[in-house]
Length: 168
Ligand SMILES: [Cu+2]
Image (cartoon, rainbow, N blue to C red):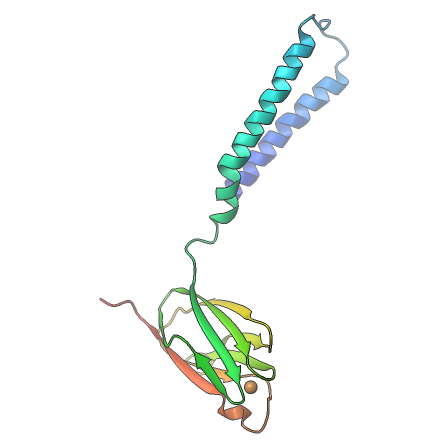
């Protein structure tokens, strides 16, 4: 969709450019008739109305239809020394938006695969809700670990959730 909009825009810009150049560099042509201003005025208003209709009719869809369906929202809250997650089952292939905050000091939310590979991370900050969008492409039990040293039991900040294949 974006590529189509770009190509159409470039073509229309070229048409306007050519018309402009022809008008500016024209050296001859018939003298303007008595109705010339009326015709120009009609053309101008016609273009304005056409432009408004085209913008309202297509621009909204062109801009906002790119992201597809809304992601699943998972709220995560950190604290000394725990992670609270409001969803423990996430469908495989589903785009997930983690909304991450903390109730005390700064923490780092790191998401690890069952094989303990880091796949995504975001800072958890007091007073802010940070968003992390991720799509899981393998099922299993994922762990949330704290990635910022936050006190004596920092290493105990562990929670987990399951990424499940769609039910058959
Ligand atoms: Cu922490």
